[in-house]
Image 1 (cartoon, rainbow, N blue to C red):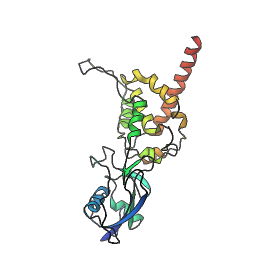
Image 2: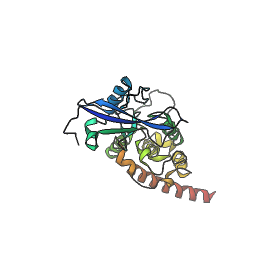
Image 3: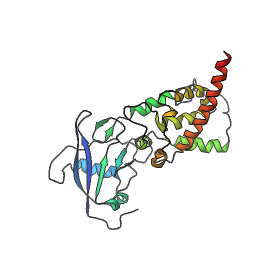
Image 4: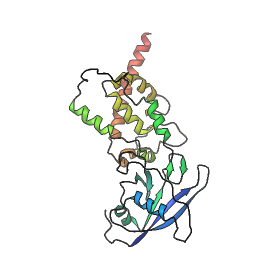
Length: 259
């Protein structure tokens, strides 16, 4: 929905935090309306004009961003109560919800300062599921193996993941103080398990996801797929991984019993 009555100015309420161990607080700023504004441009205006609505001079807000075209995933924030990419969230879409836009950091990651959070846990989880293709060297290995059109399309959909954290912010099972690996890493495990070379590490990935914090901790809330900005088929990936783990567990049981 796009704002029909364009205001001359609107308010932006930003959740601030001066450091990881500091208390959080809110500050409100007034921003002149311009057509086509995204949330990053709003923050840039506030950074250049850091005066609150009550006339207090303050520091510029801190946030993380990179590509500004919804590719890097760095600028995830909670905007008007919903986690989104601030580079692709438009002011015109937010104003129908009121004349104040509220911007907050994600809650599932440690706050470094203001809107900037530490998403390192996501990258550590990719290490746990060995989210890579094992190949030694870059020499010519000849033609690669063929795969079906259906597999290509599904893997391409999974490859769109940009490790932004939106799915984890929306997931009720993923918390700061637990070990749940989350839908992002699960989907990437499926992605690499489907790769003809990547699947050489398939059993190791499945072993990791059968353990603590793995697939069994998923509550199937399906919030993740609703907020994913890239339309990654997370719930389908979770279902596929469940089937892979079942087959893997049965094989392990019978192979173990023979020993």
